[in-house]
Length: 294
Ligand code: GUN
Image (tube, rainbow, N blue to C red):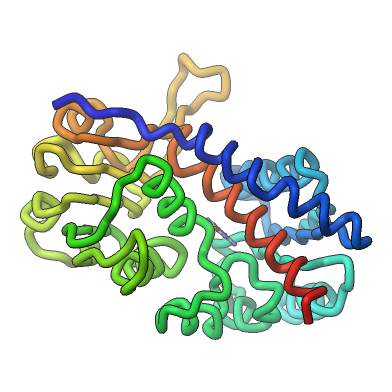
């Protein structure tokens, strides 16, 4: 089998199209959805992500406020930034880019964001609602992956879904969404991780495989079932002197060997990435709508 490509750029475009009219309606009511991004330190990958988020806000006519602070910021100062954004009427969504420098208490920062402005869906209140099947906001990357599956009519119901990676950002919420008793879910879900024994045995069971570990080459063609749907969340920079940037991006999946066996596969770049940003815009618009619906 040779896999068909899941085109994240195309799906992200359709998501953006679906929120355009909602943004216009909000503006007619005098509300411009506003997103604040908070970037601590100068990690190049994080800078790139935040820049893309700000650029997409501009493209869609959302208000954005990009806050940057040096890596040695004190916890109290970061807490104060979040407290002010919580109260800012023109800000509907707050995104503190992860990971934070190690001296900062990231879980405390996540909990300090008002749940109604938590457009990442990381606040324990929102995580709880997601787990019990009453989602308020879904984390952007797993939500985007669900949009990819929906767009290509890949129904996880009754399928074996294996997620490699147990982060709070992707792995755990992805599992929680796929296992729900809900339309386009109902999968049998396994989470594998760095301490799993016999990873290949587990991944070979997958009808739908989601790789989200942040390590190139974690999954190769010998580790997947013929006809599997392969979703690659990894965004890894590897040195490449032929590229003007000095690096290129690769996923967690060895694309060529997996594409030879899979039925569907996401490329890197151009697969999951565009959806993460599109769903952040979607979550910000929803937060703005809720702010005026009482
Ligand atoms: N770092 C990597 N992905 C994300 C994300 O979706 N949200 C935030 N806040 N930080 C990230």
